[in-house]
Image (cartoon, rainbow, N blue to C red; front, side, top):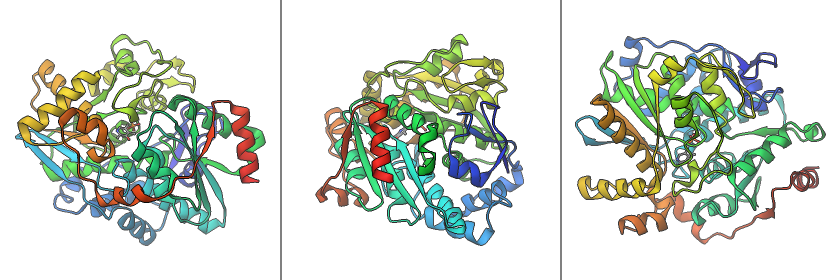
Length: 447
Ligand SMILES: *Cc1c(COP(=O)(O)O)cnc(C)c1O
């Protein structure tokens, strides 16, 4: 597998390099030059297989030559040791619950596989790295848990102090050992730009910094697997499917784009966003404007005003966007609009959807999942399209107990994985958004 940078100024690299480095030296994002194509027969051979079986079948082709098969199999089965329920809502609608991993968020899917792949390469070469990751809530805890206790890797998580829930924060601050957490007096976008500056800072090169947020290609490949799994479970080739994806940094949605590239018959990808509507505006107007500062919404993990994965989406459709968000070459907008429908959902609609799902179907969802459901409902109303659709629930309702209770009156049961952190002591450092201070912090902590 060869990977190129979306900024087109860096050399092509191997999967291992892209995984360990995270960002390309020209500040672009890595994308595979090509991916395997799965035939209808291939897909249908996976029909009754378990999640790790499907994942391994796909990964061994995607990562052919990059890792030996027995190691890959062990890593895949170890990473995916939890359920992936497909809950039926009505004849043509399912909810895929991606919330059964150790941190009850879909980010476990990517983080657990990526951590184990990194560990494999680092051990093989006897190297050590520090992972810096910016989080709007769930990435940080998923990444911290995925790497917790591993050798050769240290993790530093930056999160916006006032924009994560207590439970999200505790998932990051109670682990200790090789995990550190920093509360930033700012927004997610500030955390992300501090992390990005550190990566491109020559004076920090000796610290062997790496990334694990959605800019790492190692996060995207695992996020293509559950789309394939859902299709194989629910559809008969060449039947088509629609996915509705609650989106912030658009990593989850890019996973679906990769699955489609690998031959999955996806009729429409619905990228549902909250009031940070820079992507739906771009798709309708052809002009891109980031939202600075990002808007606070109850689906807080999606409060992103400039999604880093947009550069990848534009690259897949033949365009080029730099890391600042300037489009130097327009993508094929006709094809892009044909494949992807992006829709903005406000907090009132989100809450109404949560209540409606409980009243009508007895199904409890949390705000992020509700954005996906509402996006699908609007798409269906406007397009008279009753194709089978899967909408993604990206977190467990118990991760947002106050919001969920205020809106639905139900205090969600805590999954066991979340119970553990409640009683543990928290440890974190505090910084504001000043980059030089952050740099000093890294130099003193890691040297
Ligand atoms: C991160 C996150 C999202 C957004 O995913 P992206 O890949 O950034 O688009 C949605 N829901 C939840 C619960 C999340 O944690």
